[in-house]
Image 1 (cartoon, rainbow, N blue to C red):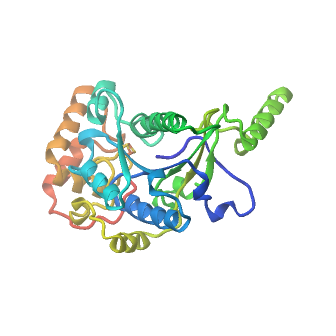
Image 2 (image 1 turned 90 degrees about the vertical axis):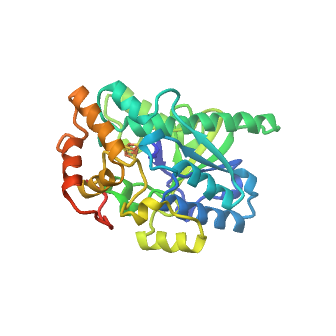
Image 3 (image 1 turned 60 degrees about the vertical axis):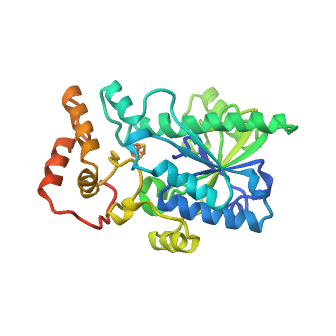
Length: 314
Ligand code: SF4
C-alpha cells in the first residue's frame, strides 16, 4: 500500500531511519509475501536493538478474500506468531475483492487502483483509529505516534523507486510543524493565484489531530537476493506459490502483473481465472485493456507449466 500523503522529511539525518522508541505503535503491514517477511525480520531486529517492547508492534494483514492465494492469511498469522507479535486482520466491510469487481462492473487498473485504497489503505486507517483509542484508554495523553511500516522496494517499480524510505504521512489536518509550513505555502500560493509546487503541498495522508503517522520502508533499497537471504535467515515459511513459479505474492491475478505471471497464475488457479472471465463476459469490461482473462486462460491451457517467472510488471 502506497501512502497518498507521503512527504519527504527534509531534516538532517532523517534518512538514517525512524527513532523506533518514539512511537506508541509500530504497525507492520504483512501480506505473507517475501518482502513482508524480510521487512518484519528487519523491523524486529532493529526494534529489539532499540529496546522497543514487542507489545508496541502490531502486525496487520489486509484480507482481500479469495483474490489472494490460498492460505495467505494463515501464513501471515504464522509469521507474526514466530516473533510473538500481535496480529490483526482488516478487511473492507461487505464484499471481498472479486465480488466487488463484479458489483462495480469493472476491474481496477494502474491509474485507478481502488482495490488498494478500498481493501488495504482504508481498512488500515480504521485500525489506526482503534489503536489511538486503545492508547487513550491506557492513559496516553496527546497525539499518538504511529509508525506505519511496509515492505515496498525500489526495485519493484518506477513508482516505488521514487518513494522515500522514511517519510511523514502528512495531511491538511495534521498540526505538526512540517504540515503547518506546507499549509501556509498552499494558502500563500492560492492568495497569489499561482500553482503551489507538488512537493510543498500538504498531503492527504493518515495523520490528523489525534495521531502523528510516519511511513517507513526498511527494505526499500534491498535487492530481491537480499530479501531471499533475509527470509532464509529468518526461518519463516514462504508461501508455496513461490515454489510454483510466482515472483510475487499479491492477488493471484493482479492488474499490474506481467503476462507470464498471469498465465502461470491461471494454470495454478483455473477456478478463479474462470470467475474473472465470467465477470468479463457479464460486464463487457476486460481484465486489462490490452489483455483479457479469456486470452490469459487460453494461453495457460496451451502452454506447458512454467516454474520460474522472473518479471512481474506487465
Ligand atoms: S495486488 Fe494488484 S489487484 Fe490486488 S490489490 Fe494490489 S494492485 Fe490491486
